[in-house]
Length: 154
Image (cartoon, rainbow, N blue to C red):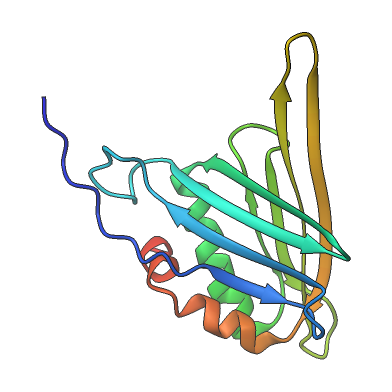
């Protein structure tokens, strides 16, 4: 049995941060090893966030349709500076990201949560981070120019 080669996906993450860099996020896309193409399959995203001294990292599966909608909504948000773009993981609570217009003057914001459960010998432990910060619109302009965002907006 052979698998199709996975498509090349640019590994440049979306990077957003507040003005002093104390809060930030990076969102990147990876594809399944045996995927014939990202547009028809679920995708793995990687979100790393820091917020007021706390940091977290989550790898989570998202529906392909949800990723496409998120990329479309990012494009619309960048153009109008109104509305929002949301992305949720397939497994509830692993990853939640909302990028939205924070005010009528064009300031944007990102909020979200990431979590990871570890299982010990007799207990399980949940590790989680909630984050939120405002950022300048030019950062979203740079984000929507990334090849993987353009690829998944269709």
